[in-house]
Length: 481
Image (cartoon, rainbow, N blue to C red):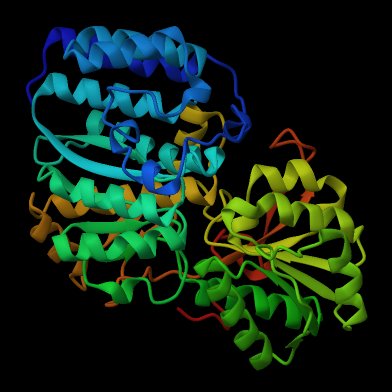
C-alpha cells in the first residue's frame, strides 16, 4: 500500500476523533424507530438505489447533519479528500455513528487505490438500534484492518444495504449485490426470515454469506457458501433450559412465541425438547405475538392458571415492544425468561423494575472474556463495550478478512472458511466453523439487574458459574454444540 503525506494526515485526523467526546453509551445514541417503506411492499422491494450505499447517500437519517450530507455529496463526486474532511467533522457531532465511520473508512481506502469490497445488510427501517449495533462491529474491524493489518496490501471497503428485515426486500437486495463482481462476501442478514429468503441467492451465485445474528436451525443446510458466527438456537436454547430447570428449579414454563418468525419458532422447538430432557415441561398456554387476538395484559394470568412458574418470551426483533408489554403486565408474578432477541436497549428502557432479574440466553457478553481488546477498543470508538450483535458482526467481518489472506476470489474465500483448520481470533474468542457452516461455540446467560451502564437504571449482567469467575469463560458443563 502506497502511503503519502496527505494520506497520513487524513488517517491521523480520523484517529483523533476517538478522544474528542466523553464516554456515552453507544446504544443510547439516537434511539428511534424509523421506516423507509413507502407504498406497497412490491414497489418498495425494487427501490434498491435508495437502500444501498458505499458512501454516496445517507441511509441512517437519524444521524444526518450538514457535514455528513456534504460528505456523501463529495464521495459521490469522487472528491474523496473533501469527503474525508466532512465525515471527520460529522463524527465530532455524532461520534458513534457507524455509517459515517464506514463511509470515512471507505473514502480513506479509495485514496489508497487498492481495495477489496464486502457488503453488510442491516434492518435500518426495521429496527434502527439493531442495525447500528451490527454496523458498529463491521466498522470497528474495517478500521483495524485498514489502519493496521491490510489484506495483501489492500484495504476493505464496505457497502451498506438496508433490508428492513423484510424477506422480500432482502431477496431483491441479494440479487443486486451478487451482480457486483467486486463484492467478495456479504455480512448478514439480521433476522432469520430475511436470511433464509436471501441465502439461496448467495449460494447459487457462489458468494459467501455470513450471518452474525440469525439463529434459526437449518440455515446453513442451504449450502456450503452459507455461514454464521452466532451459535444456533439449539445451542442457546439448551443453555437456557438447563439453567432454568436445574438451577432456578422452575419446572413448568409458559412460552410466548412469534409464529411468523423462523428464529422464534426454532427457539421454541429447541427449548421444549431441552426442557423435557432436563425434567421440566412446557404448559399449553397460548401466546403468539403475531396473533390478531394477542393481549399482553392477559398472558401472565393465563400462564399462572395453566400452572406455569416461569414465562419465556421469544419475540422477533420487530415485536420487542409487545414483549415489553407482557413484562410490564407480569408485575413480578412469574420468573421471566428471554431469547437473545430480548437483549436490547428497549427491554431495559421499557421493562425497568418489571424486567428486574429476567434471564436470557445470548451468544456473548462484554465480560465473558477478561482483557478482551475488542471491548476496550469498542469503548474508544462507541463509548460502550458493545452488544453481542456488535461482537458477532465484528467476528463475521474478521473471518472474512482472515480468509482473504488465503486468496482474493469468492471461491478461494469459501474454500478457506470451509477448511477444517480455519481459525480466526475474534471478539468472542476463537472462531471456527463446523462442517455445516455453523459456529462452533456455546451460549451463555445474562440477567437484568440494577446498574448504571445503559443509563436506564438497569443493565444486562452475566451469569457465570463459580468455576469460571476467574477465567471469564462460559461454562461448557452439560452444553453441546
